[in-house]
Image (cartoon, rainbow, N blue to C red):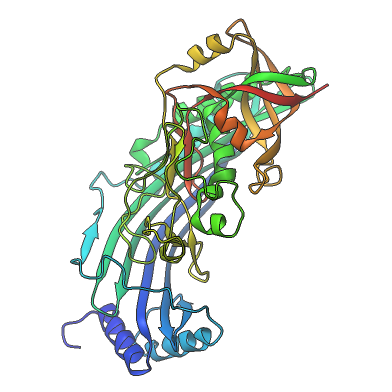
Length: 454
């Protein structure tokens, strides 16, 4: 082991031990993450956490059964115990008969997305950025009395995938996100609104833009009232359209299709949406919250068109679902965390933007409702049936112009019907806060939705 790092020595020990104990197709997905999270409140630092963590997920085949384990330490002498844990897991594991060597097994090892070189930003400057978020949110309007929360987060991630045959993939990822929630109050009425931005690092974010957006929206919601129940033409503003898409994203996952949890089963090649709708999962999107060049099975990622001009083209697959469907993996095999098994997840999923401005959609609609916020997307969405019912707020649109704010309404419909009833797509593509898959959409004009109000 001369001239080897401790990390490299560990991998040598691991693969040698795995081979000696009859573990085949042994693979490791290692992540080393440095992160910073800070929050401010009422002009003062409220919390600051700087952390480093290492997680490694191991998978292999023993006696034709898959086994898996994980570790939060990578040190010499640990390799044998990891292999023993994996073998124990395999005794209760799933059948590995479907497993084949990946198409990348003979490819050269690769390293992707090296660190972006930029000006170093001190922790104090990051604190000042967060304070500026709050300042700009409160400066918008006298009705803004405080912020519910005001946060800045960033991470740097070194990630690698290794197999026993010497195949190695490496990548570096980094990202920054800022979010602020503003509170508006007037004569006992309280309204809140939030705004966020995500970028490669701090210099891609604007404290003024984020703060002003949150403050403006919160203040504009003062005086909001309900509307009469009925069916209305509706504009789903970009982040609302993205939130609904996020809730229904799993219907495009190969495992959900095979488990009879998607009504899109057997519909590849059929028209499922208006011809103006194109849906893409783009793992290589610059600045994307989930940009990655390989999945947790060592499959190289590539952009995947799920719906093209309204026609369903394919589903997202990992190696298992692809094998079961007589297809190729799309490079969407990921773990939710190191302890879990490999499932199917989107990366940077978006509805492609159109050519119209939001104001053009408002004029096209004439009179109706523009929804700017929804609540309860997890509880109010049934991904199997496609039905949704969500608490919502927004603005009345009269003769193509933005009118009074609206609140205390519930919008309901069916995701599959919404796809078919899209009548216009704006050019204002935006993405949600990247909790899971990074999901984005432009504003959508929908022919009709049910609105429950007064």
